[in-house]
Image 1 (tube, helix red, strand yellow):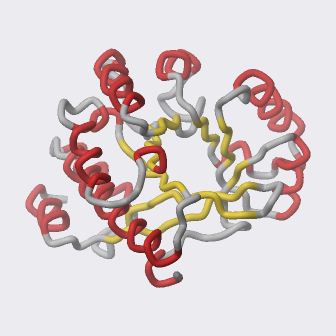
Image 2: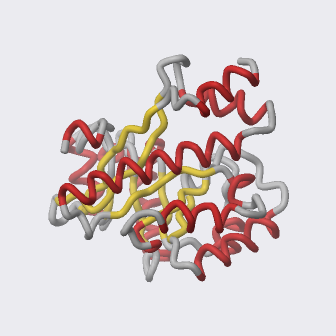
Length: 242
């Protein structure tokens, strides 16, 4: 994909964002949404992000998606008085470390009546963390401003226990690898139970990719409080469904 095509997608808003609910399993209530970019010009958003990464404009695409997500979520928030909901947005490490990213995010949220505490930044795992010190510097600023930091797909992608301990996120997310056939896999159950014992003393753990009733029940039995996945709800256009 050419750079000109990527810039056209961003400048002409040739993309949208869909939203997948995140549930509090004990109450079966929606507590927030994860925003996911969709573009009809590409077969997968990964294709678009990988191309943007190749051309050195991943931060521009990230920020365009985040800005659009916040605007759509805010429209829903105003119409439905959804003050108890949070919005989770994906962001690449290189975008987080961009010098003016905290100021950009605060400015976008400042145009709404949302609080910074309602915005969760999911640090994307599909990019190497080349300079962790730069990322941590901006993460510290973001935390001071009240934004919530989440680490996505711990142990699956680039993220490791070292990253977890350095970044100190408020939320840890595990992807569908651990949730798939969870009810039949004792090793996966033990892994999740271990992380619940070690890290669930203040950090929220969210399990992604719940696709069957059996796996949802198993997650609840283990002690998972928060989850998302196709069994619970597929992503949808928030402004259409409200």
